[in-house]
Image 1 (tube, rainbow, N blue to C red):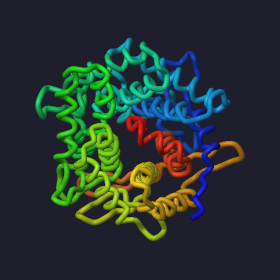
Image 2 (cartoon, helix red, strand yellow; image 1 turned 180 degrees about the horizontal axis):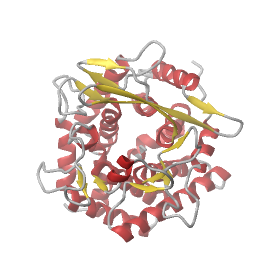
Image 3 (cartoon, rainbow, N blue to C red; image 1 turned 120 degrees about the vertical axis):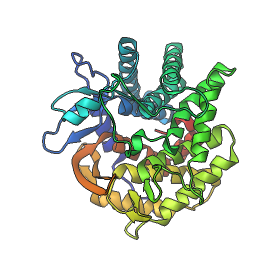
Length: 395
């Protein structure tokens, strides 16, 4: 079967070029979340996305040929992303969610000082992966300091994990129905970085928190073994659902945990079992029915895991379904010119009291990062082999 070829080189050029390179900005080295169609500019740097970028650049640095121009580019990009993370953490002792670059909505401004466990965990994953790529003792020590902060801020022992805290008590009360403030399976992805540091440090320094996160991942399934992303029955958001799938992939391999490996395949079968004939995947389950409001990140998250599982099991279980996803996104949601390419975000659909759909007019940085890794894993045997043997490198 011919593999669908997305404009991978152009996507890498676009991704690297989005990094904030204004040395007079507090956001120098950060990555934005998106680029607005109209203004063609970002409105803020995003700390979580900078963590993803550090992971992706480290992954690419490990698989690209040495001394090539592209490898030199990702190496430098990783270095200045790391510097922002290090300097920002040294200055504040935590990570601001966003650093304004232009006009930001009042909601985004209000929530920029919230401390999200998941966001900090993705920065930690970036540090862990950059530690492996760079071999730097300084980076490793920064990772340990960030891990210690996360445990102190978000873990109070046993099952008492705190998904989000406010910098100022009472300053903001997040909607309790949003998936990003609930204590469900997606938080298992935070355990990936902690698993690496657990083996590196030895002893029980991170073991209680790590065990709690893995237990949370395993416990947050329904009676069919499908990961929960909401505490309310009949609702599921496939973006955090796939974070849980990614956690099962990495942690299942790291700890040789058959239960997590089984959950990985069960949940991939579930989402691909809902795929439309045109290749589209759902973004939600609402009242036990799939909702097809296109989101590019969901599609590439699913492709990454499916490609990795096919390689790990030496099978073509998902190959045809992967091809249909890539063909659908390439035809309908990929923007391309002579030198660059990126993917359009799509539609936000958050099931609160009802499903509200909002079309987002921007090119999305994290979705394009997911697309880059997905295409490497689908097209490049060495890349997928590397991820399966180094499973912390999932972006």
